[in-house]
Image 1: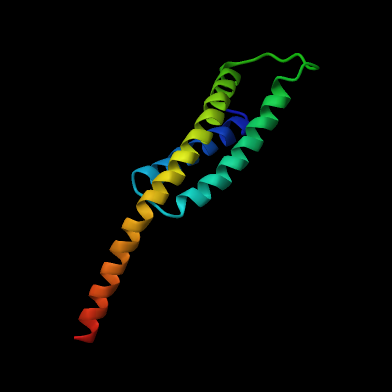
Image 2: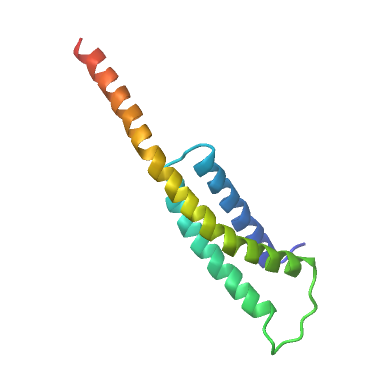
Length: 115
């Protein structure tokens, strides 16, 4: 059985991937808000784990999870910065298109209700 911190780390990673999919493929408007929150939680969690496992005052036997943790932490820190900026640009570009579609649907419904 895996330790609780491995399960938590894997769960947070899966949630982040799902939210990125929700933003970039599905265009979900609320995903960036949730993604920002879960990114902060994950950054804190990973930071605490890195300090705990890799501090110079403790001898610790490392296993494959620690390698995955350190690699994923590096990738996460780089990609979170880049993907967050890209996500904001995509949202900025898509906002007028979404508003136009919403207004068109609202006008069509309004016209059908009145006539």
